Length: 268
Image (cartoon, rainbow, N blue to C red; front, side, top):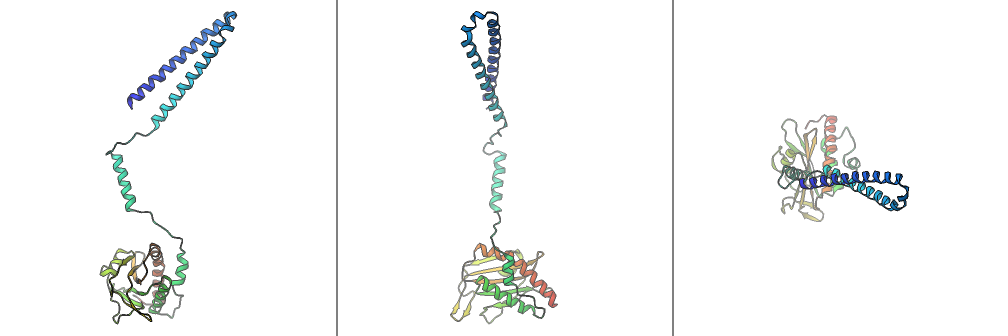
């Protein structure tokens, strides 16, 4: 690349020298034509060719200068294995680890109005949770559900409402980090479990018994503190849109439970 720049500079200086010589020759010719009008008609063609050659040389020199400036501004290539390659690989790995957040055209406020029961000061927290769980099952086609709320003193998450619970035993309490429910609360993020073993969860309806194959655990967080957990079972597959909806809906549900407990004077 250095040799090419050297040859280009030599060519530029050579053309500049030629142009200067042509200008000098043009001046000499002009003086001869002015002094001797008899040779004027015979040198007209030579005079025009001289002008054309000067213009061509000037254009070509200008073109070389533009090419040289463009080449100087162009960033140098980074060889394989250099630091630039490492930075590029690091940026690529970061993009793979942090995929862009996806959003859906879903009105969370509108869904919240369908899920969260209307205010009723005389209603206790269990009735409030039961209505909410029923609305959730209807809206998202869940076949089984449990809502847990955390007790302030013991820090345990206890079930306050169930939907289509067929077992004679009530859902067990848990603490953060204990079991799948506790792990979802500890991670502060939704957890989807697919291919649930047969018999792990059973539901009973007028059509008989069945075992749903998909489970979703939705921690209820408010100001980064756990309020409770929603456990829902589905026959259908839980897609990314449903997961995204629950992540955004959980904030409003958490706030509604806290406000309701303050209104009724109950401490969980």
